[in-house]
Length: 107
View 1 (cartoon, rainbow, N blue to C red):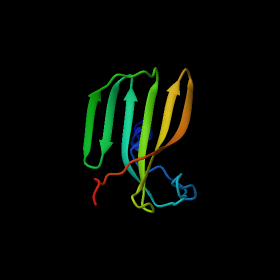
View 2 (view 1 turned 90 degrees about the vertical axis):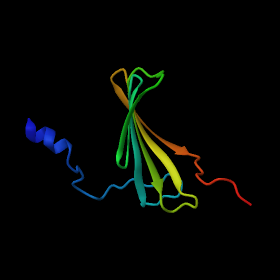
View 3 (view 1 turned 30 degrees about the vertical axis):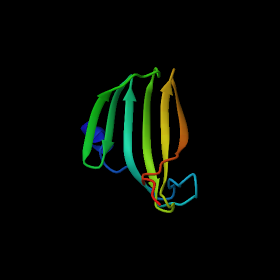
């Protein structure tokens, strides 16, 4: 059992044939920026060098996992999330394109 658990913490890609691509431009050069796990309002937020936990109002009955990606090709960068949501014995998958512009307005 320990080998199984230890294996969960290691890299899991045995083949680099299937890549995550940007849904906006199709680029393969995307990066994981953040992982969010919501379990009935208890949210774990993981980013580079930081793990935060918080309580939020949740209108979902099952767990929700969101992986936030950013793409190198956009200017500004493209952002999107891959969402996995569990509800009544089924897991649903969705890609959400985010309209994020981190730059403040300027002349």
